[in-house]
Image 1 (tube, protein in one colour):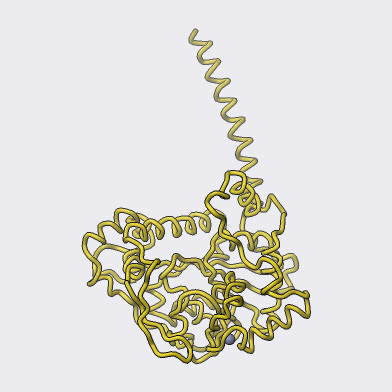
Image 2: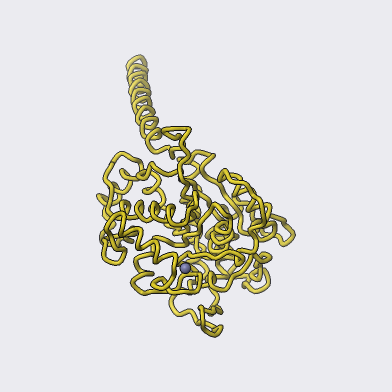
Length: 363
Ligand SMILES: [Zn+2]
């Protein structure tokens, strides 16, 4: 009986080892496919770079995008995934003109039409569509996963159009690096896997969850649109309860951290703290610029010294002129109960990034 039991155990172990080996082979195969690719087909030919800034909302991505776009070899796109909506609504470009009157976007639209015979307004999808909950079926999720891992080679129309937009902007701006702060992680991963003609990098910007929660919870903010008086805008729908904000922060940053840690080549991804960016802007920006393979020749802190043409995103892009000292008003204004709610939802990830509960920590 004992021998039989041992026999069964040995068979069981053999079966387990077999399954482990098969799984390992599959994992290695899958991992080699989903590994974010850094190798260039021709090492002598330098590819243009797309830098994705990934962050949860209210983490400072707008000022980081503009500051990097001040470098002579970088061009700030803003939330380019919204370009079709921005053109439809003829909103303001950050240069102060509307999209329809901005010289840069007029040239982009003309070049796009000349080369591809497409019009952004009527040329089909230009951005990934947020799927309705009813459409988030298991099948659709599997399809997206297969595309992100590169197993499915299907190129959606929005990716083809995004490629055309990138290509045209590289040509019109004459910059080898485009900064895309659209923030949609799935979109960035799909582009990374599909568009092999670019060197793709990921910059994860994190901010203390308590600062993010406080910022989301402000009931109003001041904004001055081009040619208009400064006004106080009352928030109506995007005020989130503290606990919800912290839950969102936790999920979004957790996902980015896990995916970049697991799949990205170390050379192609980087994490930056908002607080470091504000406290030591030149040091932080120099580090990012050199990581992009460029030379940091002058300070990028005062980004209003250069004309930008980015679109979409936070209205603060119209009023910000430089990277200011770190905004930590939450330390005095946020309620103790709210801090406890934050910590309940996001304590471990906040701690993992280096944020501590005391006031005396340095970044
Ligand atoms: Zn413009």
